[in-house]
Length: 183
Image 1 (cartoon, one colour):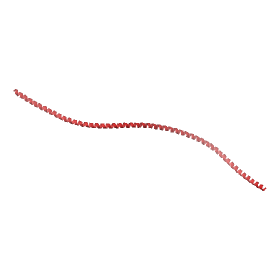
Image 2 (image 1 turned 90 degrees about the vertical axis):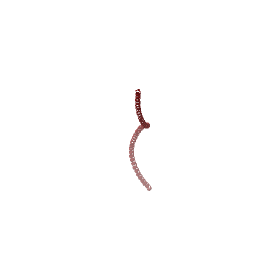
Image 3 (image 1 turned 60 degrees about the horizontal axis):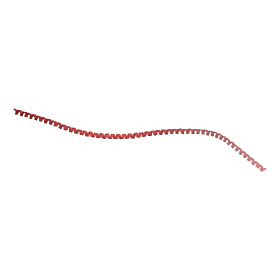
Image 4 (image 1 turned 120 degrees about the horizontal axis):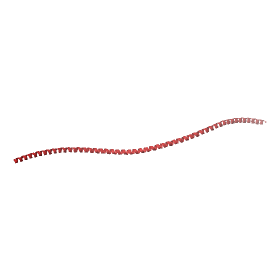
């Protein structure tokens, strides 16, 4: 009996221990259930929040893609505008380079013409100086010849005058002689 009592006592202690453990486990289970319910509610709220966030993310992603497309279209338009402007500026530059080349060619021709004009002017100046020198020489020769001609005319007049005087004198003498002979 004592063994049975001991066994019974052990059985009671085991049962008491088992009841306590079971009640502790039950309490832990209830706490875990409460937490799980709380977590479940929180999880549902989290799921709703996540769905809202995913919807917002999807909207933001669409907005971002739309903005990216708009930016790409703007960039493409700006590139086209830039390329058109570069093309136009290239054409203008080419035209300006052609105009500059023509202007440089015309300038070089004008410089050659100016040099030729200076050379011609110098040649004409030298020719004019030579002409003036020759003209002065001719004028001097003319003056000298004029002086000689005047001298010749004077001498001729004198000669004719002297000759006339002589002739008249001779003629008078002859007439006088003739008159005397006649008498």
